[in-house]
Image (cartoon, rainbow, N blue to C red; front, side, top):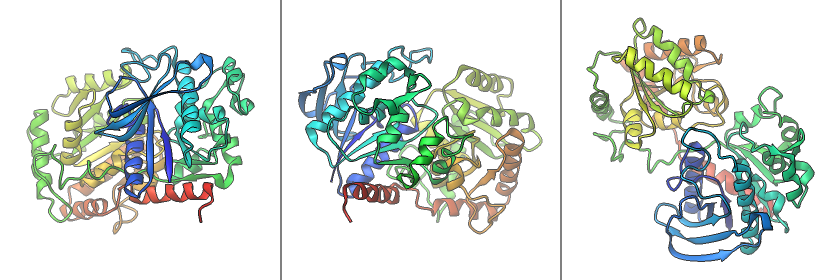
Length: 460
């Protein structure tokens, strides 16, 4: 089966957030199942390819020239990089100050037009689009191509001025929203199947309060909308083979985790006080609820716990984290930016992982943490609800601790319960091994996607 898989990010070639990791993990697993997958991403950086061929694409004049460079990337495999006017940037979406590029609508509408033109050339069995950056491609298709749209985050819809409607040749009325143009809205209504990245998120986006203004078309999809939980790349996230950590370990022998804990303390310059280490590896944006765990720091002496934060994002949040690390250097450590090696060390060496998301379509960090025997503390939203079982409510199967209320008080209670459980070695080991023995890989999610593909092309 030939799949054309289009996205704005794809790890490790271009990675801003979870979108890149999710796309890469799914494609790797699909290929392992024998699918012929061509990855299609914007040519942001002019990345060289092996066995490269170049094709000019037939796109509207406002999107021209559009050039597809196809070949093989050592890190990605079979890939096509598409160059359209304005797409080349040192960051896919924002400038150095975190402001979106003013021509983002032009860039990604042109990219979407090029994706549809490439589909016309390639005639794939399925065109799989991801998020708003590629959703508009379904409005540019001149021929019927079976299609899937994955919603990684409905909060980002690519909404722009109504003038763009005149440039969409097919079903442009479906892209109209409040006098503007909404790529996600049109893609949702045109795709043969829409996949949300967890079952709970698929339910949440059908509700008025959590549907980001698109609940009505999502409800109208009925069984064309489904939730398939993301996985993690277990060839990268595996404590028994991870080259980034000081000592490998597994669920049968957790001694190496204690050595990784000592190594993490050394990396951040702390002595071991015996208090549990709480890790945060996250984008620092409002969605992630980082202020909740920062607000909990005032109770760190009485609980107690210590907090290690790795991430970047909104200045107000990063400034708050930095201020706490300065005022309480023995309690809070903050590294601004992303450091892949440090991320692995945190997952391996931390005792607990804090993930207080306000909403979370799926989330990867909680699964990565459980793979490393680090106990997650989460809010009961989206994929966090689907992946973390509260150990106080299900002692035999519990994998972490869940706050049913999305606020600081609820999260503080879950943190307190987690710290209490961590201090009891026998209980800690049960929770750790439950998480580590769960299959968090992409294998089953990939098989679910193949069933979706087969369903829309009529294979039974």
